[in-house]
Image 1 (spheres, rainbow, N blue to C red):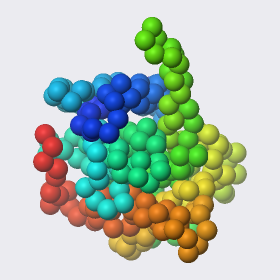
Image 2: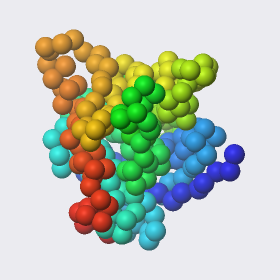
Image 3: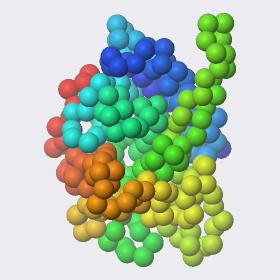
Length: 262
């Protein structure tokens, strides 16, 4: 399989954790991309850490690490810059407030940016030709508990570290004829889902659009009518039905109002 090599800058603009911590997250996602994603999706990425005092290199896709979300309940999302290049944002303090690992959010957003760079790809449902699922690589296996660890080796100044990253679905997950063809899977890298879309791991979710209206299926892990369920439902807005990325799929691209990030 020919592998596409992308260039992604992880731009550190947060104040809640050390720079070395964000560098570790970046290294772990780089290992995940080259070791795990490249053989399964045919794409990898050169992940470059950009310190708070540096400017992102020209032509790189950007993942900006910030403190607090700019939309309620959002841990991270991916978008486009005014130059039309893919852009993602990860919110460290917001993730921590929800009890989530920012490293998993970073992995999630990098993988989904790679899987659908221009927020434009959907797959037809197996049974309903008017229903479509966006090609999101991590939503179905979104929970931290579905993720896995990347080992960073010890150095002269730091011991060995294990950084948690997101599980991700494999191409077979979007084969909507898989049930008919009786494909054996696996459907996610860590075997967290048992079949193609809309199968979900615990804590996962997937948006869908039918007749131009977006909705969502979820596999909650908390009990109904509890504070934990309220927090879990709030977090679903990470990729919820009214997420402006979803809305933009219904608007001609030349009418988009793009991010002011260069």
